Length: 458
Ligand code: PMP
Image (cartoon, rainbow, N blue to C red; front, side):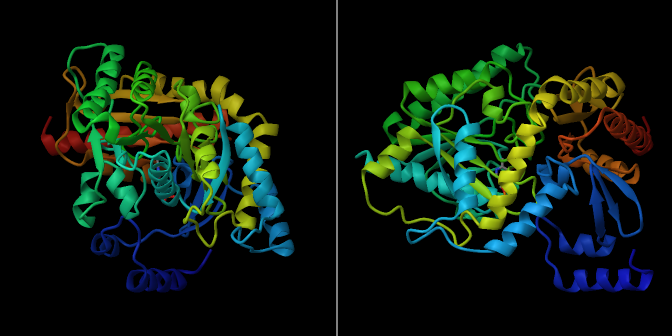
């Protein structure tokens, strides 16, 4: 552990030189940054020696947990053999070829070809460019509009922020990319209107049809969605939602794109969230869990319909990145997939630890006065924090951040998304660790409740 003086110097250097992502630098510098020093399994430690359960698996990505020797060894070995080479100019290398094949095998349907990038945002940009190019090659260059959802997160590049539905991001980076429309999200609990979840799912899906008709079916290239909206607060769609979205896309020949950056690689109990929710995307973005976050890598899995057109038309697809299919990241991702497969980790998420996690949350916290609703599947969950459980009244204060800070004080990394607390622990979490996570969360909720009651005099 660094001594107090070294810690202070580091904090000072960070404050003077480091601009953090999604951060109010002034607020951060007045609070002081926390240094994470090391990690093992589901735990991280800060420089003051506090141990925290990482209930967010980093940023929804460390699916295999920290300290997996096989992943470290895969990187080390690949570094020695071939630390870098590009995949442009008629070149390839063993790890990227094997990884493309492995992704083609685990993805559903005819997603047989893979394009590599480095981040979820780059994968999203790739998807946009590919589907727009596809329609031009099909002789329908006017088919360029994209439809996404409010409160969606599709990355932080200009294209990702434009496609996503986060108003607070869009207000800073306009003018946005043109040709993008949004429909409402399928957040049943947040929209109390007396109808059943199933009916609500159908209604929200049918807003896609209305939008397609409004802008003209012949102008729409694709619809995109996260199977479960993650950064939007873990908004789990009603079961009826995705099959209806798929039906509408097929009816109007609109391409269906799944953003699997969070849901992919086992989080929902199947390899991909689209499998859990019963739809077949034409094209799919993935990142995070692809390498368990050990190295940056993302990919776009492309269905035959799009890939065959791109290939048959000949000509160069003028897109790619220096590090597309980076050999070291690819070797780690390949080993990550092997472990997920050989250790049957995704099966356990579906049948054992996932249901255990979901049940424990509901058993221990379901009746908590602050907890209006818990939704989730596998190892992803969102809790709505409410002022009044009966009437589903939300707080107008930023209760999420307050609760998130109480989680940290209780030794749990959780995340606040508005008035929701979200969780996505490593997939390798044990039952005893789930119990510990839920206990720490209950402590944090109790303390938040005490503070809120004090604030409102309730
Ligand atoms: N899509 C989704 C669904 C995401 O959750 C994220 C990141 N949270 C992204 C895209 C962007 O990924 P990255 O931060 O790696 O660019």
